[in-house]
Image (cartoon, rainbow, N blue to C red; front, side, top):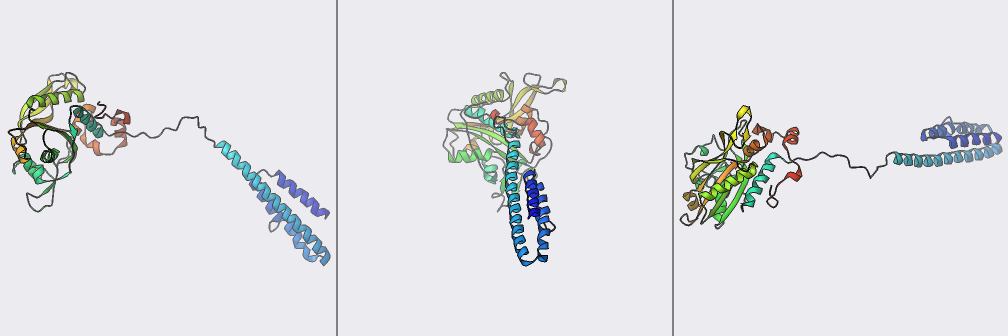
Length: 356
């Protein structure tokens, strides 16, 4: 009994001094393991007489249970202590500023569309949309584009299977079909902007098989060429942020307008540097004209009572000119480094309500 009391004191002292869960596990193995001190003593019970074996067995079992309970209690206390220490180490200071997160950027195409819509929206034009897949009539015939026009050839246009030449479906080559759909369903006066994707068989530094256009259409009883010129001049000066930007109208030809005009803006290329504004050079940026009477008649609008003007421009071209982007193909390469360089923050987005 004296030997058991000494062993108990040693083991209880060791449990009390244990500084970690590993230390407690070592104590458990040394006392209660297969070759532990208490286990070895219990193996010797077989050589005792019945009375001594009974008394010694009770004492050893009591010691075994006591040491096991002491180790388990110490483990729980140590686990709680370690958890509290870990929580203290890993505590979060809520007064610190938040970690910087990756910032999103608005694509230059989206930015340019928003700018164009904001400017023209302030002039009273509303946004209209239509399908990317059109039929031959809306995309060509209703716009007075003749059957032998190059734009109707398969090497220029993406055609989809159809019942015949008149029923062929096509990926729209411009957003003008939306003008046709609007004129066929709405009564004049009509004042719309039509931004959207368009498709043509072309691909190089300044062309893409998929690109974006925005067109404007005004139809009423009084509009005339002077209104067209004033609208475009004000738009160009607002978009490029040059109050006295020179704007020139050159006679041209489009099947859907008559008379038609290409629009140029003043620029300079001195010293190998391109700059928009006053200079001795001109740069074409869009096409325009008065809506052809045949187009109005195709849309069941009385051309003797109503007339209108229309214009169209490429979104990518505008963005390239304004923001100095040299290659159109980079718009679609999904390069995050490019987007960080040319992209815009959310607070830079214009609107039809707030303008630019």
